[in-house]
Image (cartoon, rainbow, N blue to C red; front, side, top):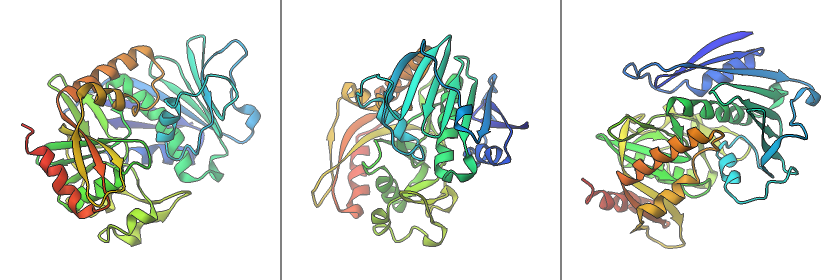
Length: 343
C-alpha cells in the first residue's frame, strides 16, 4: 500500500491506496492549498482508497440497511452535484443512481462508478471502479467528496460557493451550479480582488468568528463565460467533459486570496436585465439558502456543528440577493456599493 499524509489547516488525513494513480489524484486535491503553520494539529483520520476492476467487488448495502437518500445523479466530476441532488426533495427509495444508506454505525454512499464508506469517527474507505479509464474530473469528484466529509471532523466545512478577498475583507457567493459564481468571481478578479476559491472554500469557526479559508481547486469555465473575460489566459485551459478548466495558479490578477472574514454574502440570481442590482436579504432567509449548499453531511453531531458555523457566518455578514444582469463591467461597482455600509 502507498501511504501519504495530507495536511490542511491543521487537519491530518493519511491516505493509503494500492494505486499510484489514486495516490497522485489524492495529493493533487491539496496541491494548491496554502500552508498554515499556526493551525493546531488535530487528530489523524485515515482514508483508504482501492482501485477496483470488477463491479462485483464494490461493497453494497444489505437488505437490512436504512436507506437515507436514493435518486438520480449527474456526473460526480462536479462534486457540488451531490449536495444539490441531496436537497432536491427526491423520495428515499432505493432505485436511484446513487444511494446513501446506514447500517451498524457505517454510512455507505453508492455512486455510479464507486462506493464510499464512513465509520462515524472521521475515517473513510473508498472503492473506485476502473479509475484509469475515468475522466480526471470524475475521479477528483469521488476523492473530493470523501475528503470534505473527513475535514468536517476537524471543524473545516466545505460549501458550494465562490469566495474572494481584498485587504482582509471577504465576499462569499454561495450558489448551485449555473448561477453565475464563476462569472462573479472573474469579474471581481478583474477589479483587483483575490480568488479564495472558485467553487468550494472552507469555513472555520476560530472562536472570534467564521473564517473563509483558501481551498484552490480547478476553475471550471463555460465557453460562453470565457468570451466575456479576455484576460483569462487561453493557453492554460484544458477541456473537460462539460466545461473548460484552469488550475488556480494560472488565474490572472493579484493571486490567491488570504484567510478572511466574510463581510458580504451574495446569493446570485440571473435575470434578463441589462444591469445588475442588489436587494437586501434577511439573515433567516440567507441561512435557509446557505444550508442547502454545504456538501452532504453524514454525521448528526458534525451536521449540528456545521449548522452553528453557518449561522454565525450569516450573523456576522451583510446578506444580499445579487440580481445578475448582463453587464459584467458594472458588476464590481454594484458589489462595492453593498460594501460601503459594512463596518
